[in-house]
Each structure stands twice: as structure tokens, then as C-alpha cells.
Amino acid sequence: MRIRLFLLSALMVLTLAACGNVREMKFTDTNHEEVIGEVLQSGDLTDDEKTQFSLVVGKAQATGQSLTGKSVADILNESKAGGQ
Image (cartoon, rainbow, N blue to C red; front, side):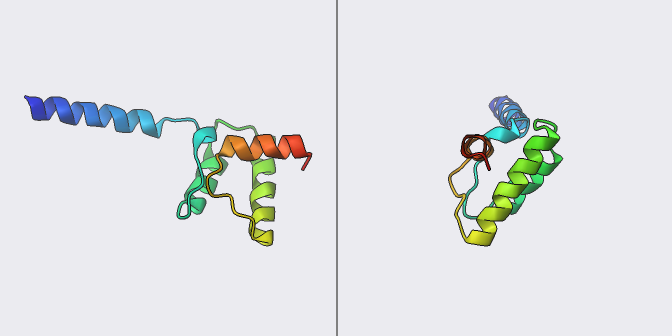
């Protein structure tokens, strides 16, 4: 019985985590492609936000700027504040 309860709880946690808002995703040293793919397929962002995000990420990759530790929301907010 405890195993069933544990498995059900674990499944619920994983389901809720998978449904999280893409804005909360953070870049790590190993997940850049995953974050970019999730952003481009997400319904959480407008087309303008997706375009702005893509421009910032492309610029960062071209200049060697690290995005590690930044969330999608951080990148969009910094972009808006900086007028990029």
C-alpha cells in the first residue's frame, strides 16, 4: 500500500513539474538546446517574445556570452530593459 501511495505521489509531482511555465526554465551548462526547444514550442510566450528570446540567445552564442543560471523570464526582462 505504501509503495502505491509513493508511486502515485511521485507521478503527481512529475506531472506538475512537466506542466510548469516555460518562463521559469533556467539555462544550465548542459540544457541549452532543451530550453531553446521548449521556448519555441511553448504556448506560454507570444510570437514577439519568442523572437526576442531567439535574438538574445543568438547574440549570446555569437559573442560567447554565458546564459547559464538565467531563466527565460530573466532573459526577456533584461532584453526589454536594455532595449535589445
